Image (cartoon, rainbow, N blue to C red):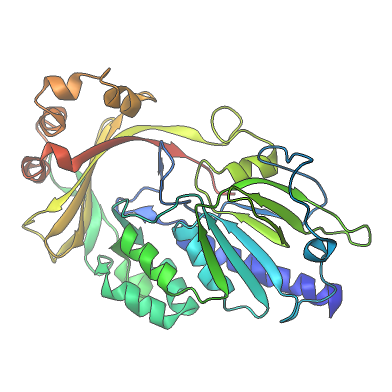
Length: 387
């Protein structure tokens, strides 16, 4: 089967990567796919990069000559993919994207997966995220048991009213029919789940053949070629001192991916990185809240000039809100450093936002009144176009 079967399997792998990207394109529970200004300490976001299918060399930090030697047997591209010599896939980042991909790959025959996570311990971090119907269908296709565990922690919103309202007049501009398209395609409804719960489920459903190494960051990689081959296995150097040979390296280490940057020979941040400031900073809160429309409305987006406010149901008696403000980049960092005194000068972030949204819907002010300042976080939002 040699090269032809190997290439067919790589084509299947590429298809799995595309499907995993659907789940990795996970949104916050607000209808926005933007990312925070700082990397998540829980691991990467979406599946963002792929190496090993071209002849070149690349590294995060140039590997030194003193790097531990790897045997030719470890590095050699196998003549055929088999149980004895599986396709070796290394995934950098054990966030939702990396773990979804690892779960998807385990369904393919003769694929050996290692997931490298730079944090030493998984800890609860991040709030609810939205899974659209196609992402939920993907989870079901990957593993029905895993899907059932997700459903057990899930809050359905796609079967409820969702849409955009005028921030001041409190009238519906548009309602999004998320229910009919899902029903017509026999797909699950859209909904939300706490990010830590989802990550825990994805970890629990990985088999022993897919190993997750914590405290293991990719420090460098290079494509070492066999002269008889036109494609090359990848050598990956890891912060824990290991050096492993792989056929494919996937960067799932988030919007600020160092793996992607190295593969493309571009900076991870700043000019030339492909990441741009969205133009918005966001204040977000999550709390127990008795909403008058719980059970009828999934999420509502109140819009106005240069700002908008989102309220979304994230569980029984549990709500999350977002206040998006058009501000210059660095607003969140300046506030954290104490340079931005607006919120503090007006009695804290909740009072500050009530002033900003003065005259807006009573629902906006009701949920702000129910939120304590220690339940509010601020971050700047950055965008990256799809690969």
